[in-house]
Amino acid sequence: GEKLLRPENLQPVLQRGSSVRLHGLQGAAALNGRLGVCLTYDDARKRWRVRVDGGEEKALRAENLEFHGDQRPPQVSPLIQQSVVFCTAKGQALELVQVMKQRREAERRGVVARDRIIVFCSSELAQELALDALKNNQFSCAILNGRREMKQALAQFNLDQKQVLVATDDAAAELKLPEPVSFVVSFNFPKDVQLYVKRLQHLSHDVEGGRAVGLFTEADGPLAPDVVSILERTMSPVDPAL
Image 1 (cartoon, rainbow, N blue to C red):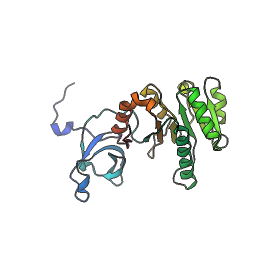
Image 2: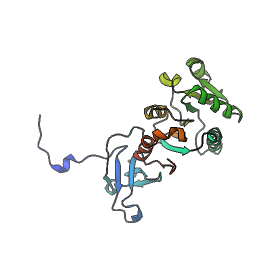
Image 3: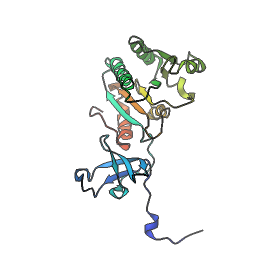
Image 4: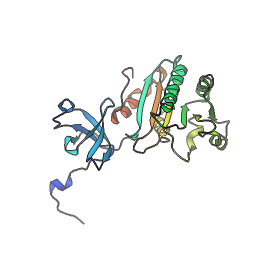
């Protein structure tokens, strides 16, 4: 049935993924007017964890946040930390190795928990390039493509055997992991941005979230507007080269 309600009872409620503008801050007035996205709510402190444009995170009261812009749920969970790095096609393999070494170093230092990693490739040719670079740098990899059975690949993909799964998009279409991973690398980008979104669905969506790194080259140029839109919607840093 229909109800007569006061306007103040029809106000939208902040939730994970809400796009907001910061206002009314006294001690950090420089933040007023900045845009952000709500991540999680700390009930004990009565504050929202908010990622501000550019990637910085702040703990803020609800009264210092006002709705701004598109309130539809973002395609990618805002809890996922995304970064997309522009590189040359020739430097792509080197960039991949650097990203992987940085992640392993962070694990060694205890900055992040030790976990499995998925490297996604758009084709078997790209997969071969990624595998060569990783194997030459002592990364033990499980392989998933049209010629490798998923059951075999998943049996090897664990912390005790092969901690890195290098998969093509086609072969990973039906990929279902027992548990999500905390780190995903896009060695190159697929033709359709929705495939990029699907890659990130294998990441953890808990409070800490997962991390996604994408390597973007000139060949991926047509996808730039869509990728930038996804990054901006979650207030993730955007490489100026995009």
